Length: 336
Length: 144
Image (cartoon, rainbow over all chains, first blue to last red; front, side, top):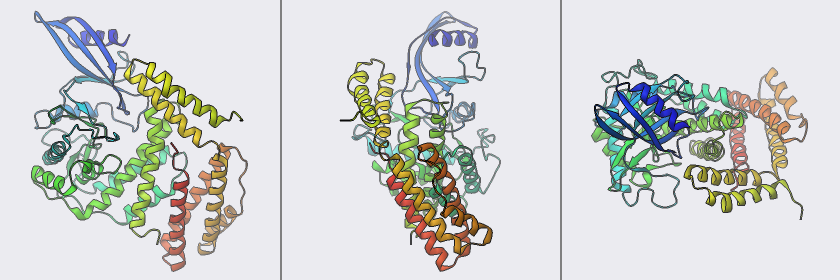
């Protein structure tokens, strides 16, 4: 029973406490790179009965991307107290003896996610105010000096320029490893991106890496209560998160016009966004998405991961973003 | 009526969606049952013309490689010319996919060369390749 194993781990992690009980364990649908469970933990500590609602994030056998195991935990720790809605984290365990794979435990935040694929309003009438908070929070993230919060160890953390090339190289390398049937459209887009580099950002930013509709929680009164899924966090050009957020697969612009959002981002970050560079990063986002879907398809096909979301992401997401790449390349004159 | 693979997969999809999914109390497992049905439906809709689609696509890519050959330098031109007159080594989907992968790889090489040439003929063929990639993506769109 997973409940008993979690309770045993908590007893190990909190030697001053006793009488651990874990119940109401349920897997949460949605996370594809890691397995996510919610549970209730009860124990006795310093003569008091403690009851906590917690989340367990465990490595999947194989996910959408190869995530560094402790990355998300370290980011949550580093960004605590930075005026960002994120859960508190408690234990990071890399030893598979406890729950078969590495995991960490964090607070269960109030609220629910809004699915970007829902046919009706995923934000229960709060789309505008949520869109405004969404951009303000992203601007605040971009304003944080990653070195001041101890995040130099993130990918590109010691670099000051050339983020576009580093990230493009990275995603192309992952594509090289995982592509079962080569996609000339994706390869052509990568060549276009290399031949038409974007301007450098004003300054490096902490890039969430998967900042989008569906990766945050909101409460019934329309407040964003937690930004989640930081497994792909790195240092780079803030436009990477901006264009990921407006990708037509999960566009936050469904709830707030782009210019309104960018103005809020600029106010919160204290920096100006180079709108001329948006197009480059939008194509980059489509390429990045294609690589993620390719990895998903490969991991399902290999049998390493048998989650239906992984298979469907590979099929539907892959087609969507290749089609988007072709539309973008047509706009750039590739078809004549 | 013949009980085809397509027909059987659609039947399992309906079973998962209409009977098994609603009977599962665990929300995660119920959602997985629904998504499993959807995956089966996409597979079912791609069964009947899977071979035809790949044979057609491989032929289209060979035609492009044949058109590229006269524009490229000698070793590459020979490689493209040989590929353009090659035939599918079999009709199993796995065999056609392997051949498709080989031909697509050559198409990428041809496009890289065409981009570097810069002549009007090279540019026109490159644009023709991009239009063919659009057609390929259209034909491969998952059918739900």
